[in-house]
Length: 284
Image (tube, rainbow, N blue to C red):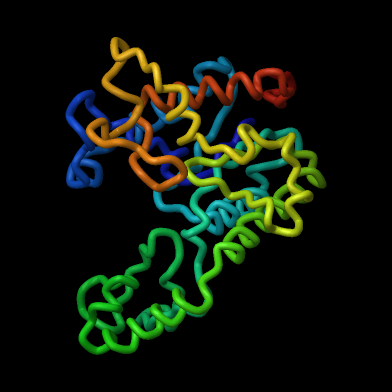
């Protein structure tokens, strides 16, 4: 069984793309009358990897907006529940270090009490301060909180914000998962989606097992940028869902489209095709 964990780059966001029409409107993407699940299942890189591998059972756990903490939590829950077990193969696609929850930023929720609202893409819906949905951006615009919230965030960003802290946190998730997977005899690989989660400045960088990485210290986004320099436009308009803008390296931008995801699937396939993955008592 192959398990693919990650954020929207694993889920397959971007496969709704139509060549030459720019980015699909959010109103279409999240239209409750439109079910994109079959599209994601078929054209995400896990879906296209499954096609390349042939008769293999593969599950896509990708979820839009997931932070590395969300991804780690998702993996752990599936290990504890027995869904991911000895003999399985896990592919972990890491998200942005910026999505890391900050434990000292809380707000009041009428139902749950004080909750952290800085996680993932700040998607928690909070009701305690204003009637409409509120996230951290709203808190610095809210009349009751504006002055104080601005000072809090300004104080944090100017005096204590540290990329090193974020890298250390991301790399701790990686190191912990290495131990879990190896102790439980679960084969695995890591990869970076649109942001490199590794920093050589972190003192335990040497503990990262780079042989368990696809494109270590390199991102899928950079891979697509480099591979598409001489892109054959006869097979599509571009490799991105938003084919009207210039994509920057190592930054959160548009997702790949189904062509881009195909290129990613082929890259991963070449890296793992010789690995022995248990499937119904046999191997791939």
